[in-house]
Length: 605
Image (cartoon, rainbow, N blue to C red):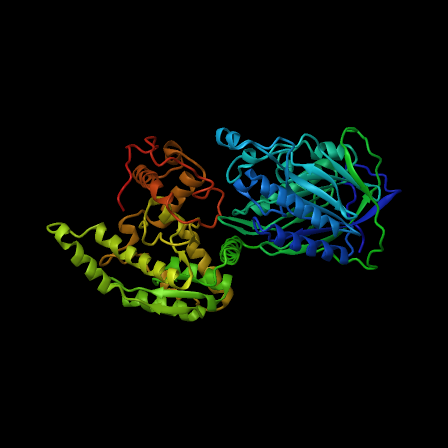
């Protein structure tokens, strides 16, 4: 194929002498803390890239340690182990230049035990990109811009780098950047392109949220156009606790067009051929250092292959694949053999069951049906059908007997009181106890089934339906739950989840004839208010200005604010929005500020 990367309008390159570069982007699924395993994974990808004829292979941010390592970065033994792993990896690199992300111990003196107590969070590391070639670490670039917003805490751990850097490959200059370095226009990439770099590479660990991949790609295309250089971004892939990394690495031509794009949510080695001008260092930014210079000493394959441009996923498919990857990696990386969940015949547990089966296989999923006297035959029949349609295991444990035993035990204390939410919650907590007992006995991971709409307003029971190890749809609003189930049914070409589940009004079935809308605004309306109040941080005045009913606004704000203490006790959940509960949205439990018309207090539910 013809090599690509020609200059955009308004930019001129002297193409009399040009350098063909075969670039590989290795988006991999690393595991935090598994330095030896990650080193082996990286070594395999570097070898694959070399075998594919690549001159240069770019790997993700902090791929040697996994991202984010969090407070492991405060431990010197962890940083030393990462450096040892990097040196071991470098010894095996030949015939190719590899760019590898790793945490690098800074030159700051090691703290004494007393210093660590008095100032425990002194930054002792750099977020670095190592240049590996000819059996050694040939140079190191240090990330200059450290994000400290949303899910990022990099200023807690890292010292920023002080200057841009480049490498030279067969006469072509290549600028080095790490993640946040290119999210804001300017240094370092502007200095590197001004100094003659016509390829800017970006090693990144960019967490997934709905729409983030499109925004990230638009940013890369804009940087390429603005700098008149080819831009290549290699993103990591995989699940790390709440965070999902979606891959979708991309190469953009100097005129801002997509040249190559990797798959989303799958490891992949993306190979792309470029034709870059040979350049003299200097230009308008002569101070940019060249860390190392390299010459290729092997012949490439005779025929180039057309670069892959993976098709983007629909919003429903994207969210579903993020959830599936999150469950799979949480299960595998934490050593669980199987998962278990309560299946009620409702839409939420149906979606979690679908995701679990797609993530780890039906033979590793157990659905537990736990009918009470308030459970309808229709919901229980649907629950059994869902397990059967998905091929998952099915266990039935009626809770009528345990309910009666608890009523009897509490009767002396509850004498002369009305049945209320207390008795409803006992049912949910019985189910939570049974699921946790199965988990303890067999080592199964309990998946909880509450959605974001419920978690937002506290429509969930502590130590009941909130009991478990992973909250799969904790960041998925109820209206999106329906969209995901319909889409998965459509892709399957059959009703994995019966139509009756999609059509039935949502109900917790904790009392006779109960409906969610007895306690909550309709989900279509509730989710709109939550999207504004929770995900966009809009206050009461802003919500009213958007046209929402005043009574609804005040009710939702009160419910959201009073439920913070519950959310703090919830298990980790997979992040798919730009503002998830937990890492993104951190509010005090003891808090007297409210946007609503009246103050609120935590409730007992």
